[in-house]
Amino acid sequence: MDFKAYRQHIIEELEPAKYQRNKYICPICGSGTGKNRTAAFTVNPDYRGHCYACQFDGDIFDLYEARDKLDRETARQRVIEKYGNGSGESRQKPRRRTGEPAPEDFTGYIEKAAAALKGSKGEAYLTGRGISPATAAAYRLGYDEEKQAIVIPYPQENYYITRSIEGKEYRKPAGTQEPLYNAAALQEDCVFITEGQLDALSIIEAGGAACAIGGGGARKLETMTAAGRVYIFADADEAGAKTAERIQKALEANGTAVQQTITTGRDDCKDANDLLRTDREALEQIIKGAQEQAQDEAKDYEEAAAGNFAVDLFDTRARTSSISTGFAKIDDALGGGVYEGLYVLGAVSSLGKTTLALQIADQMAQAGTDVLFFSLEMQREELIAKSVSRLTFDLCGGKTENAKTTRGLTDPLRQSRYSSTEWDLAQAAVELYMNYGARIWIDEGLGTIGAAQIEQRIQEHIQKRGRKPVVFIDYLQILASPDLHMTDKQATDKNVFDLKRISRKYKLPIFAISSLNRGNYEQSMNMAAFKESGAIEYSSDVLLGIQPDGMQDGTGDKIATANRQTMKETKLADTRSIELVVLKNRHGAANASVGMDYIPAFNRFAEK
Image (cartoon, rainbow, N blue to C red; front, side):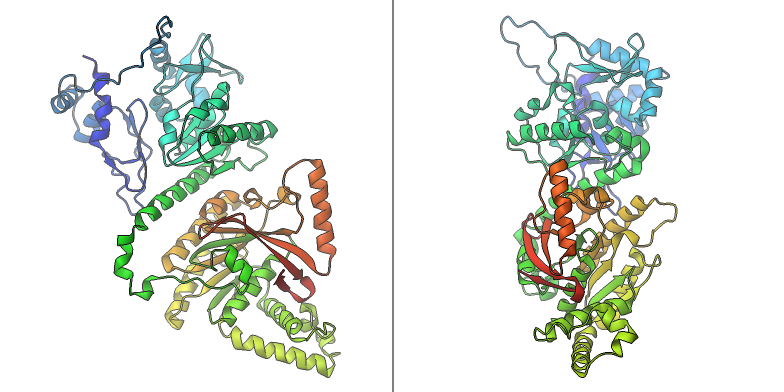
């Protein structure tokens, strides 16, 4: 009897996980029933189930054995009794055209190679590449001792390729046309497309769904569509960038949009497999961020059904209104102002990211909103002086010689030289600040404030004031680590996820300032510019960047030289021409920009 014919019924034994396409609650360990409802059980195209939580791996018969604690023979009998003799027929193979030769059947070779993997050099090679025995078994990886190569079968295809364990040489069966590796992954909510099969397996190993174009080129994607969000995980070199462009064009030719092209973002890791071996947790965070975003979108779509809102129709407490930034054009670019969620603002040094955030905080407070400002680098006195400096400029009536810089307000020697007009102006600015400053709380802390302390402070504020504040953090990369054993990147990722959680829990905006990668100082603003960008890109609701007006898109020496000159000239100017770019916006359209004039001497931004 062909027991393989019954494998497809494994789906009927599983309960689908809510908001996770093609994921199931594990019938062995219960993964997917916990607090976060994150299921770890998947079924591959060969109808073999695998749970990344308890490491179960097997077909419907293995499932019966493990779940019902049966011996092999009893498990088989139970399956046959339930689904009937012959009820599990395999899908019919497509007919060949008349005169077309029958394709060679590689099943025997693939099975033989899979049986030879355990204890072989091939298994050691895969382990060294970060591929676990469970993943190798789930995807029927094998070893050919004669060729000294691992064998990588294509799920649901009569096809395989080999990879030398001593070099980087891939070989495919002679006279064959290579299909897409693991094409079924395109039906997942979130899928990564790679160039190489080992990179796809690395993403699968780290908990994601992936397929690979292999050596056959990207054109094979033109006939395929994806069900969910598509990410390209490209090699971090020039060739990888070109391949990513070809993949994107092939997908777009068939109406499939690419969410984003991702690289490792590290000089020591070229591709996904390098990152798996070097920093598995970093790869897992990239995958988790993309998956959470896909799950959030699915959940948001379900919760957006009109019936869910009828009960709240007359309850204003259930609604979250937008909060104005005090800049009309920025409000328009953000979809009406600031809403609950995580906002991240990034820029290189000297372009005024702290100054702009502080001015927005002041303008919110002037309009009646409470503000918590966590300053992890600057002293409270310095921030207050920056605000008062801006107010002296606003109140001077165009006589800027009387307006005061930050240093002019904090230096006792300069204060002793004020004229009566300057004193009156400074006093008027202080009084104005005191009026709305009563709604601003500035907490200082270098290395002592983390996400947990911020959440506690928010709770205290709501209890004492009965009002939700807008939270500002200056800046993200120097928040205290939640675990001293974490790397800087791991700590930043964890803090970003926690800040996102806090913004949702208390339904308030959190505005975090971020530094940028130095490698992007000569490029126009883009999402890859953000330090530790994996978590920031995927978890932020709105991603903003400040850059000099006139920065050119693209790469190359000429563009880099031009951008360096633009950056230099901007920083030398008394009034700096600035562009605020909306890179990502869940509350409105992305890719919007707002032109601004920045006067650093008086800490003031104005829309053009």
